[in-house]
Amino acid sequence: MAMARFRHLLGFYTPFGETCPDARCSCHRTAAPLDQVAIDRTVPAGKWEFDADVADVFDDMLRRSIPQYEVMRDSVFRVGAAFIKPASVVADLGCSRGESLAPFVRAFGALCRFVAVDASEPMVQAAKERFKGYPENVVDVRLLDLRKDFPPIDGASVVLSVLTLQFVPIEYRTAILGKACRALVPGGAMIVVEKLASPTPSVDVLLREIYLQLKRDNAYSEEQIERKRLSLEGVLVPLTAEENEGRLRAAGFREVECFWRWMNFGAFVAVK
Figure 1: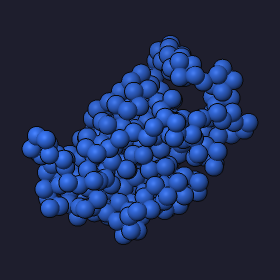
Figure 2 (figure 1 turned 135 degrees about the vertical axis):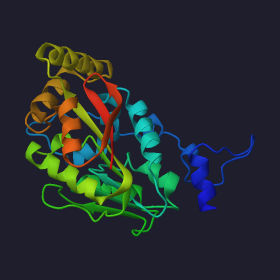
Figure 3 (figure 1 turned 180 degrees about the vertical axis):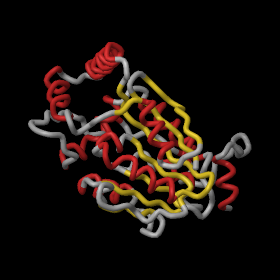
């Protein structure tokens, strides 16, 4: 039954008119109704923190702040799913509320073990609540600072880092990528999604302005936009696409490819 479930997710379909028997399969996935999502009204006063206030509204914050948000999420799952191996580990470095990991747990919960870590205690508590129906030996959610420690994920087939490294001081990033690469099985992959800087100053200004307009279009006020921008200065530090690819190669990955990009955001798959 487990292998049939796995095959179905990779493109083998149930007969017309029949329903997939696995309730955790991604074909059953539905989005939360908008009236059940806490609305982001945060106006930070100081340096950005992933505190309880941010954790409560994080899903709405991402949907309104990340361009092509649903496309990015779907692409991360589809690319990552191609590298899943039975009886392996799927890890999420910087899991926040568990949105990146959730479709993998639903799709491959009978085949894999999952490890999710975050340095924010409110985010960890939210992720634990999200996966509370699974035993800890299936979904293990931990409070962990990647600058100081690394989770036990040897034998991983997929490692996710979705909008995480941009918040880690630059001097730690290559070491984290190296540890992730060493934890992967041969042929395994790391998925990295990051906000990007442009090496061309005038283009960088243009892309940032287009991005700010997207926030305005998504009903953020000028005060919210400016306060968040000031709050994130020195906390969120993006690299260029070329720098991200170079660090992945330096960490030991043999193949690196950008599979999604919109303006100043991009997603990369790095294969060991």
